[in-house]
Length: 198
Image (tube, rainbow, N blue to C red; front, side, top):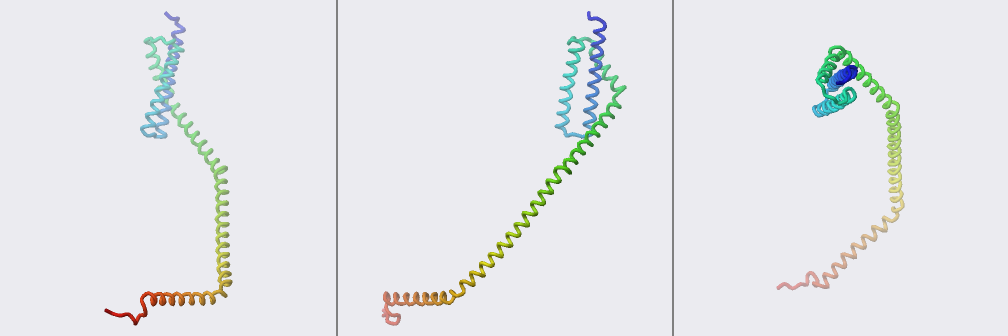
């Protein structure tokens, strides 16, 4: 039989483990009530809670009772959970809610600082650069259109003296083409009025 002080130590460790399990369950309840997760996240949180509870109870049984299963283990566990919910649960839940509120405030503050000190200047510089690129592109397009118009006018001015000879040559080309067609037809078929009808 174990010594009485070791039995009290084991009883105390299992009772403390029950209180710890109660605090973990309250943390789960507060987080669920605050964030309202979907079914998959709620199931994952439940699974995580039971995994942590199993590890905590196994550690308490090993270090407090050396793995010996006795009747007072269940009594001590239920006593720890009951004392926690009777004495400390409302206070611990309020502390959890305050901690979640402070963490959300800190996260919002960090996000605001990052947006104002890092992201906003980068976006401003990018906007200025993009506006400069668009302005330069407009200038280049206007310059290109002006140069093209100037080239068209210059080409028209340079080619203006060639309009007369071009028209003269085109007219003589068309007349020569028509004469060649008539001579070829006359040579192959004879004169148009001289055909004999049968």
